[in-house]
Image (cartoon, rainbow, N blue to C red; front, side, top):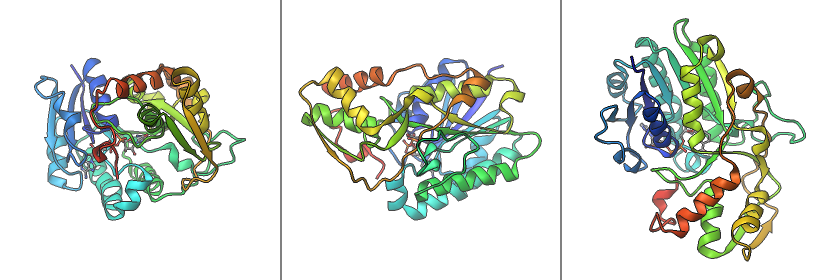
Length: 324
Ligand SMILES: NC(=O)c1ccc[n+]([C@@H]2O[C@H](COP(=O)([O-])OP(=O)(O)OC[C@H]3O[C@@H](n4cnc5c(N)ncnc54)[C@H](O)[C@@H]3O)[C@@H](O)[C@H]2O)c1
């Protein structure tokens, strides 16, 4: 029997690629999304028998209960995503990321869901001593409302889990690469786009550290979590990424220049309003589930550069490709 997975926020940047991965790997996928970021991430799957789309808001209990019926596992992604968006839409950030998550989680409990996968974020590590790698047990140090809403929900889920359901909290690296619902407000996507379109990069806070990951890895990781033995994943938190993919922001610009656009002009400015800097240890997911990232940062940058050069997206600067 195919397992049926509800993906909230499945029309989004990660959700649409994750849905595609699950569909290609033998799952039935139902997406619940209010399409606040548009419908591109849903359009490409319509008509496939293993895919269902329910339009709805996760703050609407009735819509959530309806989407939850006959489902085995939940992957909960729907959120106001990123600090700039959370700051701008701060009421929604609280009612969606917190109240909405509680509604989805409570409905999952009532519907006897087996595994509840919650996408938190590595941003929760905030500002860390970068001589030390942050593990899943490192004290979190959020510097944004966005990260605060995620941490609050990690704790809520841990406190309210039932014996029958397993929670799996993922803390993904910052993501990059092409997706049916494209975002150019993420660091690697944004630098690759600007490099192609202007031949010039302004890099702020170049020495700050970030763990990075290709967008397709999220689906691979969730497939692992949903198909691994229960004792490996039951009520676990996993950082999601690879330890060697912790890079300084300026290294991204340097790869673009060294490997792809040799005459690129790069200007560095020390100050960055975004103070986050953290290096993350990803050995737990590798040791427990045998999960390692497959795509190198360089390969992913090459694909992004081709995407922009070949005009797969006519106007990458359109506001719809950002979250705020
Ligand atoms: N993109 C990253 O680098 C990254 C890194 C770490 C964690 N995450 C987490 O992964 C998840 C997905 O992020 P993303 O980059 O795909 O963002 P995204 O903004 O592209 O996707 C979010 C999706 O949620 C939907 N949504 C928002 N509010 C909703 C509501 N009230 N009801 C129903 N649907 C709603 C949106 O329409 C959108 O399709 C988020 O939970 C985010 O916190 C993302």
